[in-house]
Image (cartoon, rainbow, N blue to C red):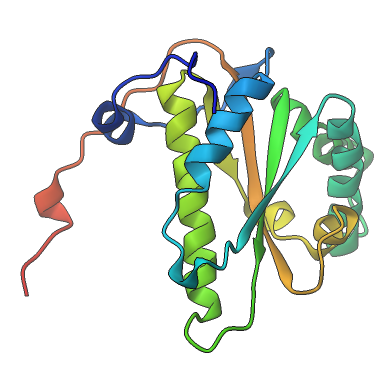
Length: 191
């Protein structure tokens, strides 16, 4: 991990992180990506199965992903209009870089599938929080496309792997959205 990355303190990053939908170039640098993935790899991981993997999608490969999105949408809705098909093709172009989130489930007597999916989610949280700390805009997007078998197959996932969406990365456009005020007492109780 590069030591030249400027970040905010951990508590600020954790308590102030918000998703950033409007993104533009430049995308994260290779050094920044290395740091993002280093943060992701620190996720809780029962029996150290490392159930996650990531596929980086840059530049013109976003257009190829858009074609997969359109193919997946047409599989679900064969009567889509040309405008709707074009919309699906354009979805990956909303950011200069995307990262496909893959959960590689391993059969294990002590670690059920749900724990491996949760571990992958924790890895994504690490990536998102590190991006926020580095002032990189990030948003985890799912929806039917984010879980599509057509898209998963097009990305080369194995049968035992699950596509859990995409993290869109780039430089934030405009003002950051306000951090919603939440109170711990509204979500915490005693036993």
